[in-house]
Image 1 (tube, rainbow, N blue to C red):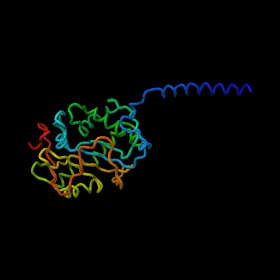
Image 2: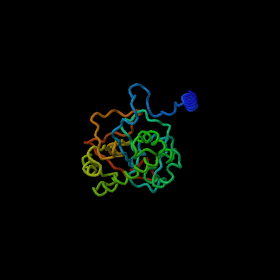
Image 3: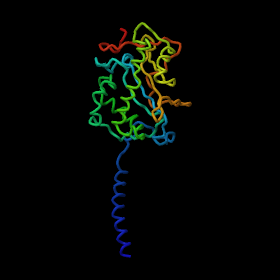
Image 4: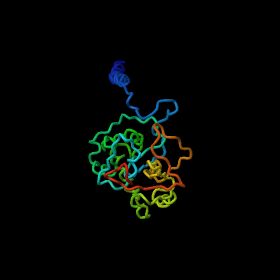
Length: 268
């Protein structure tokens, strides 16, 4: 009997502090932990329910043309190629925004990230851009072992950037930036498909002259990072509508040059 009583006391000694800690945790304000998701019944799914990712690259030459007049666009002189926009799990809901990112987390990658993943908005530092992408998308991807830390997530993005070197592929296919030479969507797809598969999405924006400018490409990847992950019933993205749209098949498409001096008006 005495032994049983001692065991009970030991158990209580371990359980009571744990319950107190749980209650303290529950009483904290966690309203900011989920800034990037909705809380209605429609999205009551686990954040690791996604099957596909989209690795997205953007063209600096066209990026600045869609920014509002208040946002100052800056393209550093060393930036002359396609750059990373992000790696985005698709249909990932209820991702926790509580896994914060600090500059020290990416210190060993800072130089390479600055070259391959720059911010073009002067008011948003490079790190602020990376942090936004991590909180919005990286934490959703972190349920996969190969992506379950900031260093793994950003390192993989850099490896994918090297794997999908569309700057070189386009050049070899005689697709070069020009203010005068338009391309057809079929021409671009013919050059890109051997590298990034047939399920990619080429996105455009319109400039003030109502021309279609190619500014982004989305490369689909499956959960195990193999190329291609078609979604038969894609759903609209949550939040504000994205700036780009699928490039039209019958309208001329321009790959405008990068103008470091006047990034908003690359063709004058």
